[in-house]
Image 1 (cartoon, rainbow, N blue to C red):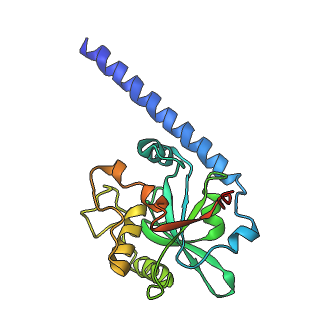
Image 2 (cartoon, rainbow, N blue to C red):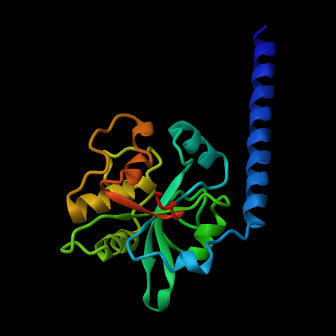
Length: 213
């Protein structure tokens, strides 16, 4: 009886691993064949310090989006850094599962878009006062990138030595504005993207919202 249970358990484990393998392979194939980006007129709307969100590929992105159960359906966030000559980079925190190294890092705008599911990108802008320029956000993001802060695989805000994607934004806003994006922390599902759609604090830049009649 015990041997039969072990055999069944082994079959289930192998089936699960096979499912994960083929799911990730299919997601990787979709990502590699993607040419998704924002049109030039929309790229021109981006400013230094904007926050850019997306839904990525793979089972981890799907799991995050499903767990958060938010609308729009998102799984990742980064900071827009707009360089002279309008060159755009994104600073974000990624696990080594999806990046060349673990933690806070830069990537090109093109790469960020390619790793996004088509039509999933959303951009918001913090409604700051004149004494607090948006560039403070990107400068602090670049500071953390220079430190190469590791990725927070435990998804725990109480561990300041490593960050996951929204945790990076949380620290930046605490550092530069004393603004707590997550004043009431419970479980992981409380640490999603809802605060970035609070119109009292953020303006949605993309997709462009239709003007009210």
